[in-house]
Amino acid sequence: YDYDKTKKSLLKIFENLGGLDKYVKEGEKILLKPNLLMKKTPEEATTTHPIIIKALAEIIVEKGGIVLIGDSPGGPFIKPMLSAIYKSTGMIDAAKTENTSLNYNFQSFTREYEDGVILNNILLTDMINDVDKIINVSKLKTHGFAVFTGAVKNLFGLVPGTNKTEYHVKMPDINDFSESLIDICECTNPILHIMDGIDAMEGAGPSGGNKKHLGIILASENPHHLDLTACKIIGLDLEDVPTLRNAKQRNLIKNFNFETDIIGEKLEDLIVKDFKKAPANSGNLRNIPKPIMNLLIDKLKSKPVFNQDICISCGDCARSCPPEAIEMINNKPLVDYDKCISCFCCQELCPVTAITIKRPFLARLLFK
Image 1 (tube, one colour):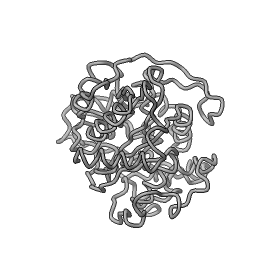
Image 2 (image 1 turned 180 degrees about the horizontal axis):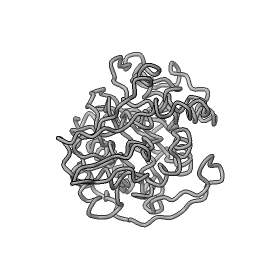
Image 3 (image 1 turned 45 degrees about the vertical axis):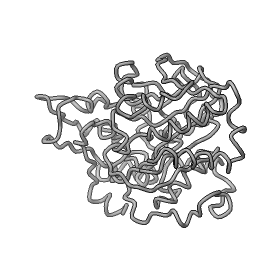
Image 4 (image 1 turned 30 degrees about the horizontal axis):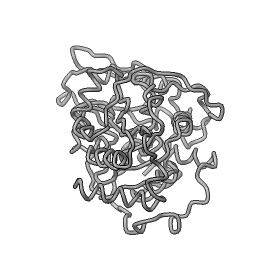
């Protein structure tokens, strides 16, 4: 990540989209909403890189804007945890730009959303009331449960802290969960979506995968078009990704042409043929008709497997498990697979990558 090259690329993006004036007016306060999933370093490619956030902040401030950087990561939404994440992810340094600050507003509020398919009342972090506009700055990654995490999934971070757990408990079906993600995205309605794909994550994302250098930054006013383009680059089809399938059904993806609607680089020059997909099969599994799925669920459902030699007995997996299927016995996690809903929050938030996702033989056979 080179700061000058990154800033130059971002300025070119704004130019291609119609100019910075379109998005930032003097005196406006803008929330930059990165992916700050957990306490990881920028080099691990789990979180939005601080150089992108710093460059964006500087661009906005030079235009006369004011910047707030904020996210609600997994786990309790409290100052000690958030401060540690800000430090490890490089956001403290990113916020050293003039007229730029980090969010420490831990309040929440409920917003009515009449157009919601799943959610009509959405609990959100109050920091969005402290700003005039939101720019969503996601990280291009695979995801064990959602298949892909980009623009739409990143806005789940506007739901405060452990309240996210409730979504997984109430919506273990990935189609319902994906509909709720789209509801949150459409309700909060950022003015622009930017995706950090300079170093992406392949394999066991969103935190346990491998860094993959793509060297790209993507942006769009339409988060679904942005995710669709990113997925095309890494070899995922629309039907592979539940949020994209559901967005298409809602007519949120329409009249989009890869050849004519992409400005800048040619898409064909960006395609990556060896990008490793997430090991789970959530997207395909939930595309099976429910009556058949109910009969086959135990034979098809991927499950988390714990490497006790790597485990550091921190207990984050047990605390983050929505259905409370994990219990710490003799300082080691034990899973009740009858309770497990295969949301993979444990794998997502494990600080030492001690959890892998095991796919049953039948699932590997059906969903290659």
